[in-house]
Length: 544
Figure (tube, one colour):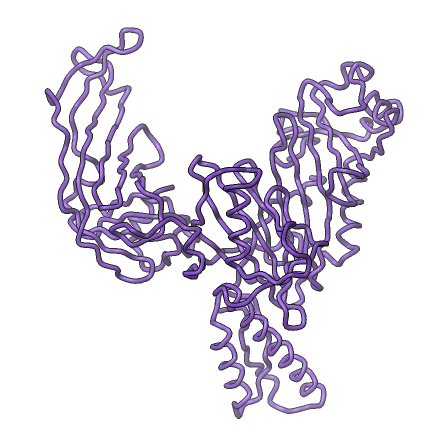
């Protein structure tokens, strides 16, 4: 399937493991060992570096000694870098910002001094001020920061990726992603890009980034960028996709001159040089919108199905003629694919680098110096979160759910509903089971950094005039209402655990995990979850 490999969704891989101090201790232990060992940097779940015994290295040779010296030097440099990264994440060390780095699409650090050194708290403050008081003017709070160790250029030297997440009170979400490299003992910002409600950013384990955003009702932007082994930003391409299915809609193009050939055409404008709004030189290609996905000429292009063949790009094709008349540089999809491959080869981006593995980000224990940008922790649970906290219990299928809203003092209100449109009976066509309720949680105890225990002190179902009644709704349909108990809070549980995002999945109740829709491969919870510890059914609520 042509062109598809270049548009794969790419996500960031993180390498979890021991701290730099623990790593240094392992290095010293390896050096002091009486056995001859080969030290290698490996990417696995055990950590950024894994020391692997080489059974064949029982005899010393000059070649082996030189190899071990080089590997020891790599390990030492890696340890130094990891120690700097740890200090940055603890808000104890700053990074240097250079004006020639891509600093973002909407959110950016362009107002910061070129060559200046800034700590994590100063970067968060800049983003916070820009969103709340600058051009955007959305009220946001810092909810979490994640980090990942990646390997830009696949050279066995770690870089630090940081993900800053700041949701707004208007349901808009603002995020910023950074790639940071240790250059001669100084942290440098290599890349920064933002994402929000109409955009998505994914980064892989080798520093290859795919970002896209909606640029209006008719246009979408897709961008592929990479940071190479030297920490240099490599702009692969930015693609502007015009998907007016009623025809091409691009300045300078006369759709009438194209005629019927313009119908259902996607126009793709590639920028291979820079991503600025002015002075760009675009490379154009096009394809037909195609709904018949069983057609062997149909390919998946981002979120669309398109069809193309060589006859679409001949000189007398109406679309080709008009694009060239308007001064556009036009290629076929296959030719554009060749250009992209050449661009990747120019800075050593192999297929492995472009298609690196997905990653699991780790939650950062946010330093106290950033608390000014977070929600207050003056609530019964002592967590930095917006209240009321809304949690839902549902199967994800069917027309039922229980929703509770917990206040700062542990009091809560909620409602349960379950519609059965086929559940008719004598004198009615459908059934509705429902109730509203109030209650209170209390006796809070912190179990560990990500688990809080609380007790259900009381729960009361709202008084209804009657327990059953029939209501006539649309088109004469009659629905019988039944007052029910609050499903999910009615299995006798007294003790509940509030799990925070970043809670390790290992060891948690499997039935609970299915109720909160945790992926079987996940290592950590991604949401706040409420688990009934001593109930009969292991129910779970989540803020997903």
